[in-house]
Length: 575
Image (cartoon, rainbow, N blue to C red; front, side, top):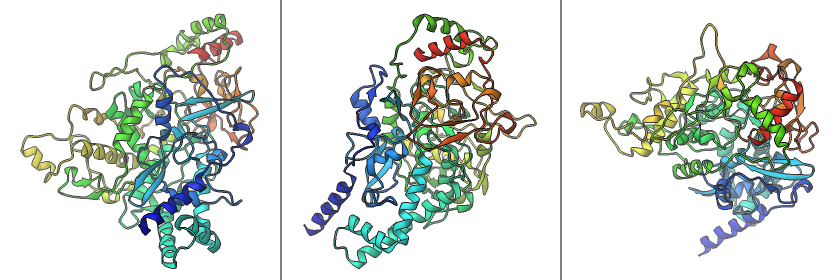
């Protein structure tokens, strides 16, 4: 009974610290909910905000006990200083939207789920509007860097650690308990700090953007596939210098291609699982594969793997319910009708429908219909293609392969191939949870146990774009534009603040702009003045297309008259 009482006493300390503090004055009133269709109900929203996907940042009690440099709890105001949004129904109280709690080997862990990066809140004339599935206006890099600082403080400041230990262990911990806790925090901090030190770029991504591909590559190849006990290969970690805008989630499940460069087939649940599992491995998922000759594929991908496959499938089903947000303000219907005519013109006449209209795409298993998603080079920033070409040491995965799909991983291979092998191998073992002597034995028996009709589509989950050619192209996906009014800033790298700016030639677009939730209903996008963040994005022109911040490209509609542009913008409000 004494042990049980101590446990609940410690949990009480943790939950007390997580009790939400007053939010910033500007966000004290509940946001206005945007209409996103009949399927997007309050219960679906609640589930989306807190559904576990397998992310494990750190023990909940640790996070609850961490402090900011000013002495306030690290979790104060539901992390609103980074742009994260309060979740009034979180359990325990005080967690932001998209932050989760799940049980682990050492108790409860805090993690993140889709909603942290894909829930948007904008502000118009002092009123806040909530857009589920919208690109978050959150500063993930600052969150990561400040978490690194907070943990380093308790490891280097004796009094800070003493306070931390009392919050985690109770008011009277023994010296042995304190030493054990200190060692555990050091063990957690070594890989985390190694990743932050090597990956976070000196020029920050800023709010509303992150370099997701680089961070996934870095996390997987730098922290997960090296030798135990640390599992690290630090030399695989590179600066994450190709930030992109968080994509919007409505209609995402129905595209036949996905990821900004369009390298992934999409359109059914198994492909959705592949897309989302890679994200989990990059966002605090625990994943340490090991060689096992008796295991299907010769690697055990699931022995030390925190991915919540049931949760990921549930999240994909929730994403399918998120409808495009309906413009909640007045619309000039006559003007919008004129804009519809402009939208439906051919591209050379300033129209949009050729690339952004709804057309049938590839059919996926089981007879799942999709929308075509053109993948085209329209002259935009090329930096992400540089990241896709990264090579890394493959560690424990050297020689790993997916039969009938790819060659074995070489000692040094692309990070892209390591990710594809890890994701597909994990899913196949999850769906085919059997032991077998070897794939050769399976062949001699005339069996093909890997790809069932349900998993056959995984062969297209990671299609490496062609990189090394005499005339390289840098193609990105062209999505259906329903709800595009709510997705600023624009282009894949978020380098254009409004739709009105996007209709200008690249040379005439603004070079820099502030980023934040204040919205412009005329130009449709980020307002000129922002107060939540002290951040200005500096972009480059077409002479530096590979900067990661180039505003170059997509010069469609630039020759339209002022009246035609105004009409088109009005139509895009209601599309």
